[in-house]
Length: 87
Image (tube, rainbow, N blue to C red; front, side):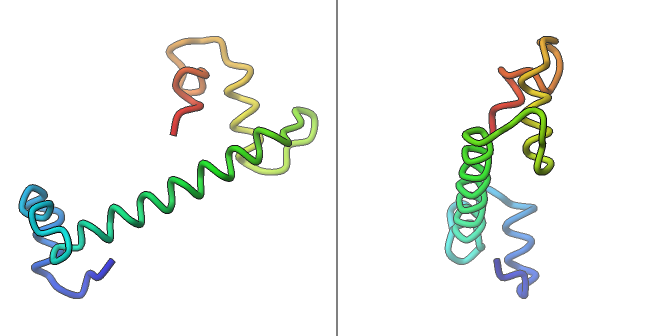
């Protein structure tokens, strides 16, 4: 995203409705593209970890998080499967 123009920053953050009307000028389109790319990357990482997850040997934070989701029964917890497994 190009933050070199103060006007673009103002449009994007302080006037989001105008930014959406001028998506190429304001940087809104770039922001959406970046968010979509990151979401797809996270979904791929989580999917790969879910397929190869082993409870007794976590490899990283994602494995620990998936294990916590699996073991949580409290519906009000952010780790509950109805909440914690959503992106």
